[in-house]
Length: 432
Image (cartoon, rainbow, N blue to C red; front, side, top):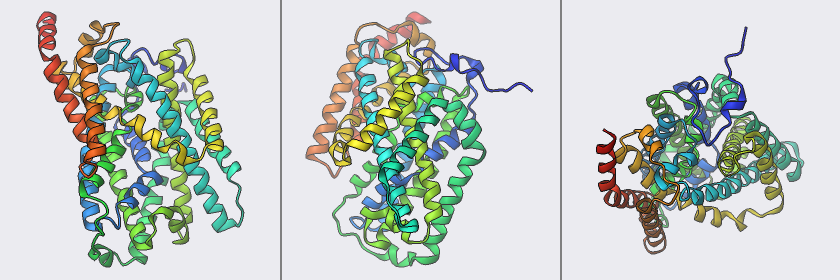
């Protein structure tokens, strides 16, 4: 019986739309992918940061609101990939122009290599903590090599093979069981009513907590279309992403906040979970972290493939995976974490422009957009993007308690709508 999987040669073409024959993702596939990507130790650690600055009740409210907004925006961005069949950075050309799209593409490669390295470091330290606690030995070098090589191998295989053969069939169920066990352990051994009655210290504002959750979701905006482009139905890509990422994020932010508050030390969340007798569940969650590293490495290769069009994405995935391992082995986490946050901050206002262009001005008409891709910079989009970045920086430095991600996205989108609406109306009339 012939395999239903397509040959990889035509799939790995970042500059071109994925042909219909290769657009095999359905709602179940994309749910499994984004449930896996939304569930992880970094998500739980973000929840842990909210307490005891906020009470657990206020933290849960911020988690719920931030997840709804962040996952909704992420799902909307995923629709662009299904509408156009294009990778995330390739679809930017219709909004920014050929030259204008080069800057975010380069920035995306840099940030994804950084985040891929960050994921290897997280897995290295977590695996090492588990081996130390349960087996009595420590070998960070071996754990970094193992985690990095596995993530690189998955990235070389590509999303169609990984998601359809592993994640949706049994990988997502392992993650679900691990999260269920952590939840049971919390309810069975922690005094949850007492935790809910505790008051916050006031060291974190409600707005900052919401922004933490939104910012985590928005950090996936520059790569979601790299995966939803393999889906044929935009409504399935939207609902699968919203439900998968939303449920996983809500679940793990809550677990992180509750476990951190019960232990009194959110900075050592891995040790807290290990000492709570949840070693097997934590091990499965760590295996799920490989999905995050895979997504970073694969999307870095896809973005770079737009700049080096003769290079195979599988070869680039191998090279970027090895680079992430080298960085993880040689660079302390604290030296580039702030830089990664700075690089990532440019994408929230950028996608305010992109979402406005695709859904409001172009009304989801990718064919018309493709005809009018200019080779030069699109001034209205670039100006609105700069305004959004400036807004982000002002809010981040002057009003940190407000949260900068969502306001910068909204303001850049409104600015672009105001600047570009006359020309968009003209193009629409001419096309009709």
